[in-house]
Image (cartoon, rainbow, N blue to C red; front, side, top):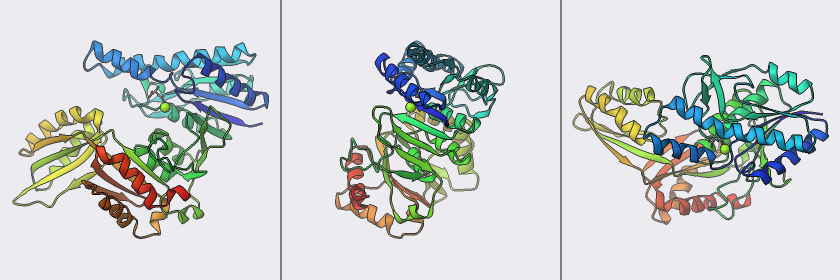
Length: 405
Ligand code: ASP
Ligand code: MG
């Protein structure tokens, strides 16, 4: 008998038949005597539909009201999943995020979990119930509903696994696990048996859509080992865990493409202390996540600053920059949305040289121009034209021999 936290994503609970399928799978685990806490997402597409509906009423809806609205997607699926279980004789109970004791900070639409009071969950687990928890939502100190950022159900599952000291955490999705690249783009992509938190984190933050990156950070921090696997078959998935020595033998473990970034260039800013501070403080205060940052060498007292932000935040960013630029004596903002970020990731980079050269050569041979470069110990990211992104992913995958991994 084990205590298992499972999470089923939006496609896994996408319609009534799929919810029944998930209920049958949960029942099989329950029949083996396991204790189960099950996190579900909203039906796939529902969160997007709700966002579109909100925007059709107000161009810039209040974030508090957005949370009120978006939380209903998961509230539908928890109740239906609990009913589906009850219909096949399983004692199940649904919990909203608040009922599950998930307390967050006050940042609406991307709240962070502060604490989880697991007492109510423990009580029902002891009573033998299967608990179905709404992903992606919590409650703040003032009793307002918050949501945890897009894809936040993953975070709910990982955080609950830590809070109830689960023996296992399983993230069920519509793919068999983590691949060396997106199999829809790179036909030769291979499923990985395991991957380290850091690699997974770099892949997740590089646009590999398997999981929300904050949830992987959380898993790393609390050392929650989890498995990403499919809810549509019984195939073993990919285990995500702390790095172990043999993982470094593989130089590059995956290639990811992110087409949801935009590049912002600020030209003609004063080349003096405080310029970058003012720019990035303004973006930080607007809660905008900045990714790659490049500053060129200043000439004649002025410099250019280039960085990437999520495409959804470009207008917010441009707006936030206006007063900041005025305060430092000016600068012009240009936004480029038709870009893609390509990243190659692997803990083996720490001990192998020539990784950047291999990547750049592969792209150079195909005449693909590199606009920005940034690196970490285990990742190389570049910004390229969005139209060449898929081709670049295939070239990088081949250059690092990932089809034979
Ligand atoms: N329903 C939310 C979303 O679409 C949360 C999730 O699916 O994890 O972002
Ligand atoms: Mg999701």
